[in-house]
Image (cartoon, protein in one colour):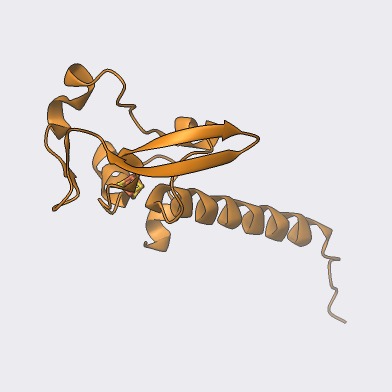
Length: 118
Ligand code: SF4
């Protein structure tokens, strides 16, 4: 993933979509056991082509399958069931790390004593 993408404040719809590496892992049934424990089953969504790992109804998935959730940054930040290795999780982790580094740098630069040349 490019740093330029991570540093952008707002992504276009295409940029956001292109982060997904189309692994299809999030398209398998999951069981929430509570307490942050998620079990990932081997039961795919009926619309997932398990060979290509692509959704067979992608453009109309929200109309045809009301349970299919639109993945947005806000939504992904609120849930705990995106599978390990999901590109969006990696993207958000990198984005948060970069933000933290930038704010630490900003604080450090404010605290840096002014040097005088003599
Ligand atoms: S798990 Fe993440 S990277 Fe894989 S298909 Fe789902 S959203 Fe895309």
